[in-house]
Amino acid sequence: MSTPIVEMTDVSKRFRTPGGFGRRGAGLLAVDGVSLTVGRGEAVGLVGESGSGKSTLARMVNGLVVPTSGTVRTDGDDVAALGRRGLRRLRRRVAMVFQDPLASLNPRQTVRQTLENVLRAHGETTSTSELVELLASVGLGPDYLGRYPHEASGGQLQRVAVARALALKPDLIIADEPTSALDVSVRAQILNLLADLQRDHGISFLHVSHDLAVIRLYSDRVAVMQRGRIVETGPSEEIFRSPQHPCTQALVAATPEAELPT
Ligand SMILES: Nc1ncnc2c1ncn2[C@@H]1O[C@H](COP(=O)(O)OP(=O)(O)OP(=O)(O)O)[C@@H](O)[C@H]1O
Image (cartoon, rainbow, N blue to C red):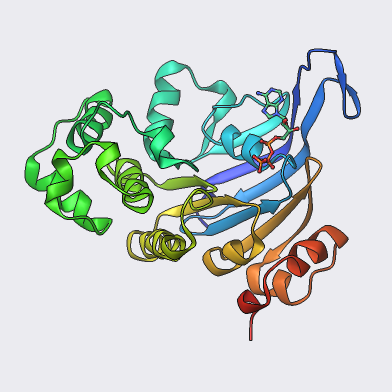
């Protein structure tokens, strides 16, 4: 079997808090002894209430958050052992899509500049036809190349953010609440786009959301977090059909009736 794209072993993260004390001892224990793997080509959903540690855990995958203890191996590399260059190479293989596309894009850069800059930062140049192809892969026409963020809708901007993530041909995309800032009408479009990328390009996904309905539809496997720990994990459909942990049961109960499986 090939090495998993993500392999986290007994990982914890304690943040210093201004008063010095927080949940369970000194500082705030945001992630508490978590082990999690994401297989190649697999989409894993991290779900849980606000503050349960999902984003912190996801950010350890590409070294944006450094664990207090435990090991994170991403694409075979021990992230803690990587130097600056190693981390740069890792971030090329692991792209991120954030919640708010407007906040994650530079308002003074056209879409073309945004895409060119990310490529240039990794020593690559590109042609207009490649950029047009990149935009087409996220369902946007060539006219978007000359647009500024304020000239596009939230859904279109999130497509641009996905194009930026794809520009470096990543092996893994970490999508942190990628649709929660969008209108309900465009959410499904963006989620379908991400699902297509997983299917057509074999990209692995770590998908963070507080919404189990979203996770269920777009992830092969689910890990449910509560207070920094994974309390339940399994195939999405199974977790949804037969939630065992009270936290998972509450998440299923909070799912609108229309989104329950038939
Ligand atoms: N840089 C930081 N410094 C101090 N505390 C932090 C930091 N980042 C996160 N936290 C705290 O760690 C805990 C977990 O936060 P995290 O953002 O990982 O949770 P989450 O499940 O992603 O929640 P949300 O869905 O609200 O983003 C929270 O109590 C949060 O306030």
